[in-house]
Length: 327
Image (cartoon, rainbow, N blue to C red; front, side, top):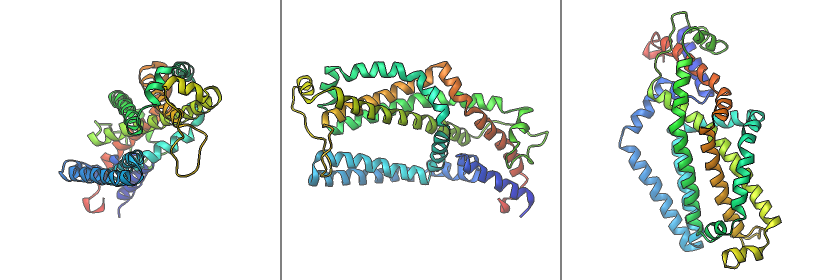
């Protein structure tokens, strides 16, 4: 194998470690071929059929509530496994998780910008009788659908705004900066004076959007989990069962569990989940609309993305010189 082919392989391994599998030409071609075929529809139909069938079967044996919950969870797990394996989403998610937990110190000032107003608004809703009447008495399947609806709207907000950030990164990673950005990477020796950053391929741009999406989604998920714990603890301390019964007009019920009794009522759990999901949506909208937050958040990741664009430019130029048999 030639030295150029070895350097190209090293760059491809670097892309994998950075959560950028679609920057590798062969992976992107394979995914594009799969997505453009009819097999994807058959696969999605099979995942849906298995999930519905399992949920229906369990619903007849353990109750509709457990059947629906397991059916939804199974659908998400199968869909996640499909996307993670074939579409290489696991590689992107792994990078996002590693980066998020590796920079928790940077997240604290970002979260504290939105947290005070968020807590003020959502805590007011938590002690509102109408919210308890809606969320506490909601059938569990409808609660999960509401949570998924909040999540879908949050993802939609991110998918609308994140491509703008990617286009900005592409503009910045050009000219003399390209060789500087490649320094310290396997593409350092491939970035010559004449290397220019052309337009990224479509799937490479999608890859950058996805890693940003996962990175932001993990932050939102962490915030929602923290708020869920806060609401449960606050409800146990400040809202007695008699108040809940007065607000909802119904007797409180135990949280369904697998045998062991937990000190959290079903009503408190449902309201906490509903408001935590709503808070996650609120934080997502805040993150993509507040200029100061966006500047602080993207300043911490923009250099990494610019480096990826620069390395791709050097990689694409070097790959053309490598015979197809050695790729």
